[in-house]
Image (tube, rainbow, N blue to C red):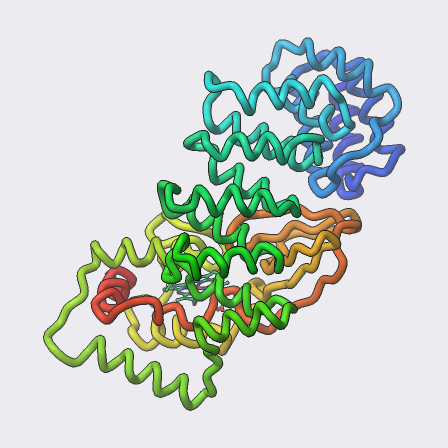
Length: 386
Ligand code: HEC
């Protein structure tokens, strides 16, 4: 009966689960006396989701007794959820247990990554130092680099650039490059590294260049323009460009190799689009799109700003710590905003945001094909049309 009543209570409160104090108190009251692990887990999940955009907060009244009981739960899921909430409520013990997980070579990579994310979300002290140590742990590098993106620290840039030539795969390199274009101060160092040939200029794909150009730092813009030129075509030029690529792809005997095209796709499209079940989720899944139609492909690839569906209108966030983020906002409430950038999904609380405005430019950059030679363009299109 009690279980039934509580579930009823939860359902009634659910829509308001941005968790007003009374709601929390009521839930803590239930958790204190409940003895059904499944109900514990359901309530804790509800609280976790309700607090998704809150980084840290004061524990609700009576939490410490609840925490003690939950930590002894026979269910590992309940213990994990309780530990996560305890971290949000500032528990030192919980912070320590996550730190141990992150550094424990015996844990699975998934658990170590999740632990790092939890510490980062809770803005736990010492995360930057922890993430720096993880730069040398295979399997943890991408998470570590993303975590370091939250900190404004010149030493981080130095550590990342120094390791760049040894980064093992596309994901690691992309994480590093995304970090380096996320703040004007970092971007200056990135351009130095490109000039010094520590980072190949070809690795700066169109989306990264656009992020650099979008920065409100005149000296930086001038340097980017000097090295890469400015691409901003009129509609007439766009039409001409589309015609030129169409001719390249249809005239002459040369054929594309779809297998090699898969590699090109992973390099310049896969971080945002899923095709045949693999890839990112920033843009639409294009498996079911009209991709056998060459005109459709060329228009969408060469002129991405021509039409942008509302679900994919990007937002620019300037954070108080100087970071600038561009992405698609997938959730927002009075506490914070969840944004999917080309690199990752981030939850930012309102008090970290300086300005927030919608952009008229698609997340999908122009000029993507300019980084490719003719055969690579044929290969990519062959892969897209198979
Ligand atoms: C930085 C992220 C990003 C990259 C990189 C990117 N896209 Fe996109 N793409 C998007 C977004 C967001 C949309 C939806 C908004 C729009 O239409 O501009 C989109 C739209 C599209 C569409 C239209 C889909 C539809 O619903 O009809 C196609 C086709 C497409 N992209 C192909 C590609 C190809 C091929 C590449 C690589 C050459 C690529 N994209 C690279 C983000 C990206």
